Each structure stands twice: as C-alpha cells, then as structure tokens.
Image (cartoon, rainbow, N blue to C red; front, top):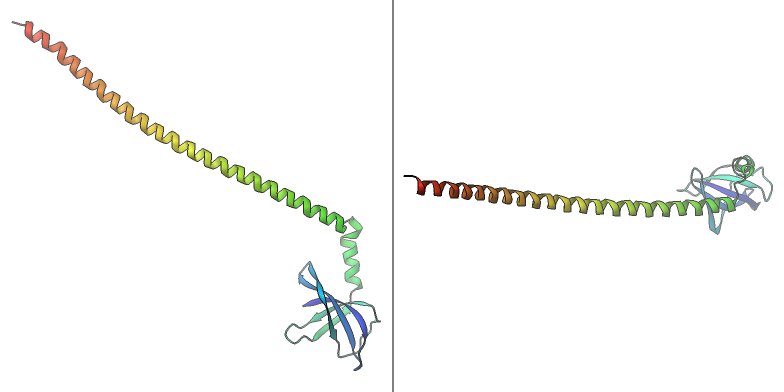
Length: 164
C-alpha cells in the first residue's frame, strides 16, 4: 500500500524514521491517518528531514519496499486541480450541488412511481368497468331478445284466436 510520509529524523541504525501522513485507498482516493504512525527504513535515505516522500509499504510484513520523492506527485496535483481553481470550497460546493441533484432525482423518481401506480390503478378500474359494461350489455341484449320473443309471441297469439 502506498503512503504519503514525511522524513522525521535519522535512526540510530543508519536508516530514517518516516512519519506516515496519509494512505492511498484507491487510485485517486487518499485517507489522512488519524493517529501518528511511524515506519523505519533499514538503509540510508537521500532525503533531508522534513521532506515529503511516497512510501510503498508491504502490508503483511510492514516493511518499506520503496521510497520516492513526492515532489512530482504534489506538482501533478497542483497541475490537475489547483491551476483550474478546484479548491476545497469548490469541491464542497460541488458535493452539495450533487447531493441536491440526487435528492431532486429521488423526489422525481418517487413522483414518477406514484403516477405509475395511479395509472395502473386507473387502468385496473377501467378494465373492471369494461367487464361490468360487457356483463350489463349481455344482460340487456338477453332481455331485449326475451322481450322480442314475448312481443313476437303476443303478436302471433291474437291472429290465431281470430283465425277461423
């Protein structure tokens, strides 16, 4: 794992003591270390006290595998962010704006879901009404046929009574 460290002092054994300041979590994500952590190098470093260095630390053995000057890395951060006006305040505003946008999208999504449920309920209601109308229509058609039959029967009966 990679760490940002500061050369603290020379060790008694010829190496150096490095104060670990932050560790890399992902490619562009670093975490400041909450408690002071130190690591010692076995060999002599070519860095003065107070210099910032990038340290590769083997997690299993807690041994330092590489130490390199952090200046190019810090300058790349300056080029990437600070020359474009990306300040902590700007980033905080962007985070707040993104959060407002997320909340707005959540509300819109909830409204769309509510409307979809209302539409589905109305569709179900219309389908029930259609079924009811079909049943009523069938009943009316049955009654109409029944009435026609009765009417036909009534119109035929008087003729048969008066016919010799």
